[in-house]
Structures are given as structure tokens and as C-alpha cells.
Image (tube, rainbow, N blue to C red):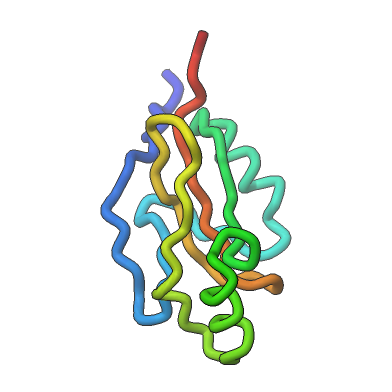
Length: 109
């Protein structure tokens, strides 16, 4: 009998002192684990959406982050995608600044 897949569920978003967050059931993927990450997303049946602070935040907030040199982005409130069922998977820093990952179950026809 195949092992039952535990589907990730929405969890409270508790950001750290820098405004970062990782869903407690999200596996730790290392840089370069793109294929592993894609396989996990497919196995979970998730649709993803990504918002970058640089293009999502109001200009004054984006400038505050990029000009400060400080890794804190706790004052950024990422936009949520349109539609129902979205939950936050992660808010993390990248080479291009903070990114928020949203996920929801693929809608089956």
C-alpha cells in the first residue's frame, strides 16, 4: 500500500524579527533544489503565486527596504492573490529582495 501523502494545510503566519516566515510543514529546500521543490509542489497538488517586495510594495516601502541595507521587511504586507483558498508558504529573502510565496490547492474540474 503506498504511503499516504500528508497534504500541507494553512498555518498561522508568525513572522520572525526580520519579517521572514516559513510554513512549519514546508520542507527545507536548498538553493539548486528546484526539481525537488517542483516535485513536492506537484505531489501536493498546489498552485503557487509569488510576490516580490520590489514590485508589490508601495514605492516608499520598497525604497525603505532597499536603501536601508537592513534585512528587516516586517513592515511589508504582501498582497494576496485573487481568488479563494490562498495561504502563505513562505516570506524569504532572495538576491532580488524579499519574496512571498502563496499556495492553494489546484481546483479540480
